[in-house]
Length: 149
Image (cartoon, rainbow, N blue to C red; front, side):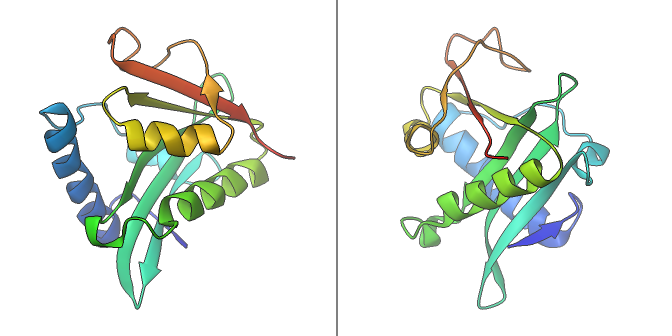
């Protein structure tokens, strides 16, 4: 797992794959705003997992104004799914946020993304009040968990 800036070519390649997945699942791309500076340590980071030097998985966290960290852009290439990469990325991101002093991690996803919901629930995430860009969308699922310190 390697921390990378948002504009790194490997991040952008995987983000594009994620956007294609959003079109398949939701019928359109994710239009939630991304400010590059929000993903620079100690306020957040992108992380890329590599296999044989090739980028295969992605995830990020950013600090919210209330002090919680929000997971963003979790993605594994289709040909690499089912190998535990999502959990590895999630674990790394939680550790990175905890190292930065964050005590709570949250994620906003959609009921249509049942695979993601199962991952987060199996990692200890539980329902929380809706927040963020899609808070008013009836399909939004907001989850959170306390991080180990």
